[in-house]
Length: 138
Image 1 (cartoon, helix red, strand yellow):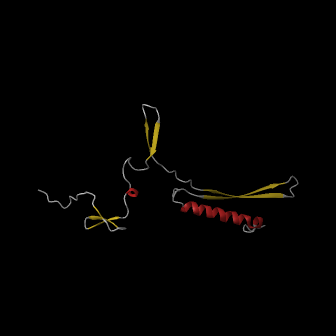
Image 2 (tube, rainbow, N blue to C red):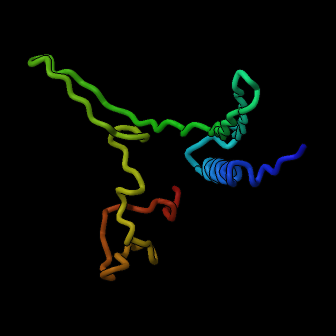
Image 3 (cartoon, rainbow, N blue to C red):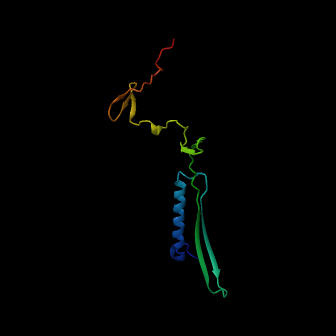
């Protein structure tokens, strides 16, 4: 006796496996999940018969085991006002508190012949930074 898994339950098994396969592939391409974790598709076919053994019900299930999304981390600076007892918290992200990030720097600025130039306006910015690399040593 043979059955066609593609035609079982009017093609529902094949459809469920295809959907599970797509979920697994999307999970594998998600950069927020660990690359090393294994993913799994489990197909279950369960039969239950009646007491006379003349009829049975077939339940079909397709389950996936996906990699969990990695948690996102951040940092808070916390302080307590000793006079009022009020607690303060301020998020400052992965950098050192007070440190500038690349997002804080004006991206329209480029260095040309030792001068900082705004690429949108062409204006030369004087920032008071002295380049000591070219200084002669005594």
